[in-house]
Image (cartoon, rainbow, N blue to C red; front, side, top):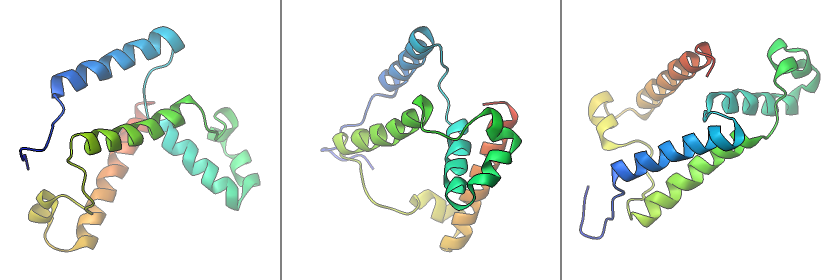
Length: 132
């Protein structure tokens, strides 16, 4: 909802800045931007708390050690940047799910949460399948 005090970010400017960050990431660090590996590594770090020997035996973690690296910090930066954008644009508000979701999937929070979880699972599977 747009009100006079809201200062929306220009989507073209935000897209251009995101593109520049991507270009500079490759040019300076030789790294492409991505997030799916971070979620897998985070799961490995959490699992290490409960069974460190089990994580060490997993084939994936033998080549990709679960650790906090530049990509993990990038994902944290996305969260912080989104928060700053919402606060400076005066659009920040606490809500479980947008009203659009309630209109589409009904009043049940469990049903809406399940659909969101399944959608995220499919997206993550696709990203990992594409080696992203």
